[in-house]
Image 1: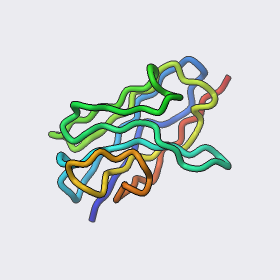
Image 2: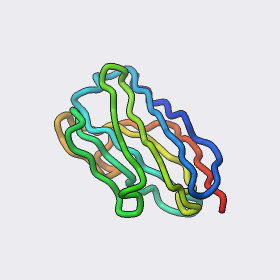
Image 3: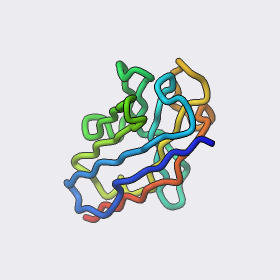
Image 4: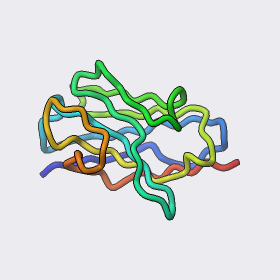
Length: 125
């Protein structure tokens, strides 16, 4: 059974930083694009960042570009999201997800096969 477990969320003041981690188990990790999505109260889940299977390409939502960095360690089956210069509008539950198909770039919720349970990030002004 595939499991994705996020950690590292919490509360921070605007301008601060947090680092999220997502540990995967139960499936080969390295052939798949890994993504971060987020969902704020009353809003739809939205794409945040993605990283290809070998980490050579990354993709970001315009709203986080230049502030967030996605990375992965295939030896540890873990993907990370470094979040800097946080803003109150970054407040959301953050989810990691693994793509449905190997060797395929995926940035849409429909292209993801498994999801973590989420980690809450709260940014106060």
